[in-house]
Image (cartoon, rainbow, N blue to C red; front, side):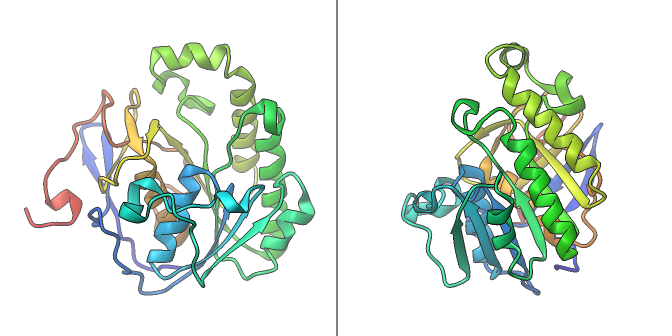
Length: 272
């Protein structure tokens, strides 16, 4: 577990800017490595979590229904993007998060922190996969004494409905109604878990390079690279003093209405 906070919360009007010192290149800077479990390992955000954790020297145990789909991410991976993600410190387990026995395989390892970034169409994975899978993960964490948990949901979930853009609200009430019902129940399960959790609600996701600036906002959400979401999640499970434990922050890097983007070199870890 990392003992020093890499990022700080800075007040920008009514908005906190979570500022990472990283540039596009991701050096191995962790002073103390961790073993991190990533559920939904073949998803685009999970691939960023895995890739960045490995670059930091961490060990990663992933669970996915499709191990062959775990690839180097487009955002942080540079010229290696879309190549198979293979590393001596990476173990990918084929399995279903709704199967408690498959989830238990992950915790046969000594896990320090858990990232849950599940996805998929309800027509493929069912109407309650997020909630059922997350409940399995929570039960396994409790049985093994693992405390730190980051769960990626979405802007518009829980009490963040008013932070979603109008067009997205329409989708939430129509074609995405089932998935948001599942996301809402997933969040409730996390909130009731008693764990040291952070529910991460990103704005519109893209696969661009990491900006190194992650804004925690109160107003309407803009977009954010998956690479920046991954950085936030990794800090949530590794930083003993992470400021958003027990909270459900909405994060956005580009756009949004309640914050001013810090484009300075200093905000990206360079010189002013």
